[in-house]
Length: 147
Image (cartoon, rainbow, N blue to C red):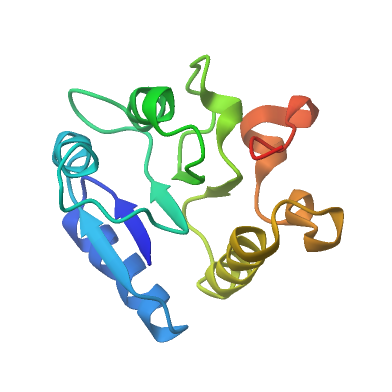
């Protein structure tokens, strides 16, 4: 199970469709507030990872991550955004980063690496550091948030 948060419904649906095509079960949200309410509910099922946009109204993706990681530090996040320059102290705590627009094939690679990490724990052999656009978001100061 993966969760997606993007305030653009068509992008949220497109990403969900891509992930379902590669065999993922997906739960999608178009508002970080709705997702925070879900995370705090009795219905919450922890995902393998949560893929989130950053630039959203009221609360951005990093602020949402900050709120969740305070009570659920074992959650994995993938930041997918067209604006890598947004600053936030939790910015470096995503597992992977992807610039919009992205090629759908990268989603399959990300999914495989996140599933391996969820099954076996973080490992250099998973090589998540080479996946996506981390350099554009956090440069070289990133280290795996799951270790």
